[in-house]
Length: 310
Image (tube, rainbow, N blue to C red; front, side):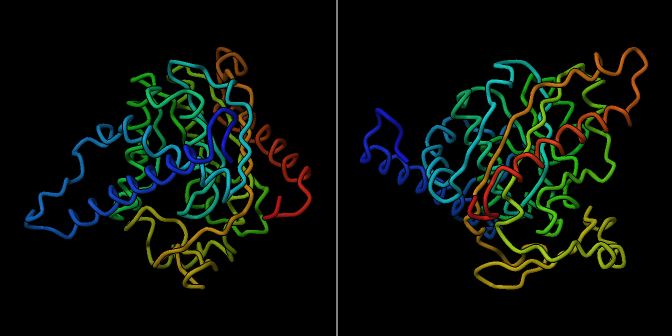
């Protein structure tokens, strides 16, 4: 809804302008992807994914993303003041919603509203995201880069806030009845990264994304049989139910997220070097972070009256 001091007309106009800018960017990227001869002169993808982040684009489109969060997902985001105003920080989130990650959009909007578009902020995404014309330019301009150890280190070296999802596709496509479970699948890379760079870990817990569709199972056996891990870095091949196509596989050919209520809570920072001592145990660090996140996610789930509605 329009905030105090902002008229309804200004709110609507800002939303419309932001939405139009997003449509233009997506259309330009899609046109450039099919124009192999470059007849239209549409912009191509940057050779360096870090160059795609565009603070001016973020300023223009934030009102549209804010309306999506406020009206469609009825989002509640708390604890942003626990994130440092500057300097490198590792934000570690639980991952939900398949490839249509509503809680990430909600959090990115809240982050930039709180800190402003000039605060360096990057999010990691699977390589497949950057193969989808239209979608990729929308997330890239907000700071999304391909998930890789080199990109993680580079973001922290540049003193950015870095959002990682250790659970990846395994967690994002977990069944909907596991909506309130943290599933990092034993991936400890984020602990090693935090210890290596000496940066705080700030857990980001989200609830509701797994209710934007009906996720029926991961399909890990089928993914393994088809060797998708080697071919496309995918450990799952899930069946999902949602509009407009009904049944989709891995969210293809496309899906519109249902308007489930999204709650996001930023937890207190964790200094793993301090907690683990001079001879840090990576597995112990993993347990510390995931157990605290699970307790918070369970509380969030217990506090709401009805799933989806909130």
